[in-house]
Each structure stands twice: as structure tokens, then as C-alpha cells.
Length: 380
Image 1: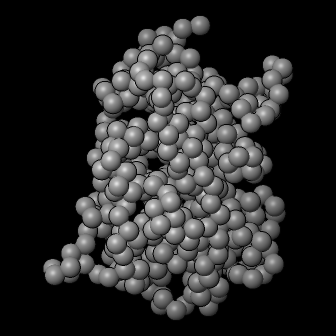
Image 2: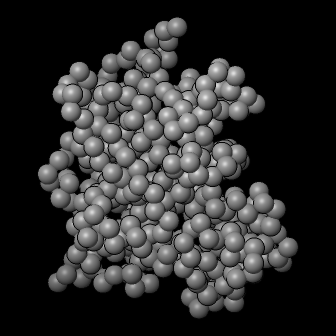
Image 3: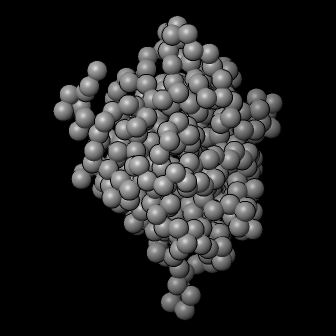
């Protein structure tokens, strides 16, 4: 059944043309650098993109799933990491040319001489401060003197805590911070090794669903439009294959807009229970009691064994309760956001402060032109 003209325009606007093949719509309006991929060379581009199993990186598995279920365009493979130190080391050794990474860590690497640029945001908000459900902590000030797990000492989660300490009139040493790989946060809280943790989802919701964790704050409520992770690429890749970077960012951007948009049509490779399809590496079957809205589909993709390998119900919970717990639009890197992050990063000693003799700023670690082009393409 062909969509109406209005629906077609909406689909093009949301997906920037990239997903048109995957939802079996015959739509135009592709940006020029994507349009040439249609019916072009049989040889497809390929790029490996790093990610961790956090919802800030969800557009990476979604883009991988979509690009491996079509015969056109480049294939963006995904490589799973369990900690940010490994991502940083692979960037430094040039074993990795594109990855989702903590925003301040990407800035720190660039300041230290690793030639990478931030080209897109991971998502907005999607980070939570969790305490044990039986704890007496009800406000941020109640955490004074407590041990808090953070995903990395160069994380924006640490900056959020510093920002909140400042807001509450507290001192930096009022909290004891412990760097812990994201997947280990729930177990650290459960066994009492920390009093609270701050982390990107779904590792907050995991302890909430398990019954021992309680949300103290969603970061959307104390730092609206919070940025945790970004997509960074090597400057070598930008210089040597700019069209591939453009295509990657367009795909990541399209994935985010698709997740946040309304719609029920299944993308290629997803099926509803009862149609006779068996789940395997190339097919995902949604439970019969699930709706087929985009967030449910994204949860099912992310939960797949080759990506997060987590219960799909967990990811669906994160993406829907509440709906604004995580947002995947408004992801063009903006100077004011990063200047605020940089002020705190310099204050906390992440990297050398910018000086007139040794300047360091937004243009040094960020190239927003790719995201601006990708988000602008849905208006063409």
C-alpha cells in the first residue's frame, strides 16, 4: 500500500531519505551526497563505528542494522566496547576511526594531540542518578560524604556533579567519585560498594527494574538537554574520505529522528510475532503484545545479541518511561553547550586551559558542518 503524499513528505523529512529503502517506500528528496549512492557502484563503502551498550549510543546499532539490510550505500559496522579507556586507546593508536565517546573525553584526547573531531551528539538527557531504594537520600545534598560511581573521570557525568555541587553551595570534596565501567554500576550499588551512581541508560533503569534502585534525579530535571556522549571521527578519515563521514553522520542523524518520530511501519528485518519468521542474526521478532512504534523497534534492535545483548523489555522501558527520559533530536553540536562543558573540564583538570599563547576552543575539537548538513537535508 502506497503512503499518502503527506506521509511520504513526513517520512522524507524524518529520515533524510536514508531509510526510504528500508521501509519499502519509493521516495525522493535524498541529499546530493546520498543520491549518488542509488544505483551506483556495486562496491559499497564500509566503516567500523565503536559504541558501548548505553542508550546514548543507540543510533549506532540502529544505523548498522539498517545499512546491513539494504543493497545500497555504505555499511556501517558496529564494534562493541565495555569501557571508554579502550575506545580512547584505539583512537590514539589509529585502530579506530569513528566511535561514540564521552564528550569531555573526546575534547581531552584532542587537547592531548589525538587528531579527532566531534561531528554529532549521541542524544540529549538519558543519564540518571540512582540510589538504593532503601536509602534515606532524597535530595542532592543528602549525598554529602557519600561514594558515587561515575563512568569515567573525564565524563560529563562528573561535570554534572561538579555543576550541581556548585549550585547547591557544596564543595568538590563533599563527594567521593569512583570511576566504574558502565555495565558494572548496578552491581556496585547492589552490593553496597557505592552509595549512588550516575550513568547513561539503560544501566540506571536496570537496578530500578530489578527492584533495588531508585531514581534520585533524571538529568533532564537538573541540567535540561544534558549531553553525555558524542560521535567522534578521526581527522584522517575526514581528510581522506569526507563523503563517507557525511554518509555516516546522515545515517546517525536519520536514526535519531526515526527513533523520536511517530510511526508503526516495520523497518527491514523486523517482524511481528505470528508471521512465521524465526529470530536469528538477520531477523528480529517483536512480541505479539508489543506495539510497532519506532521506540519499540529501536529497543528490539538495540537488545539484539550482537549489540547490547540485554532484555528488550529493559530498553523499551528506558525509551518509554517517561518518553522524554531520552531524546534523539536536536543533536547538532552547539558552541554554547561545549563552551560550558569546556569551562568545567578545564576547572577539573581534564586538560590544559586555553590561553592566548596556547588557544583551544570549539573549532579545535568540533566540526558541526556534518551534523548541520544532515539535519538540513530534511528541509530539502
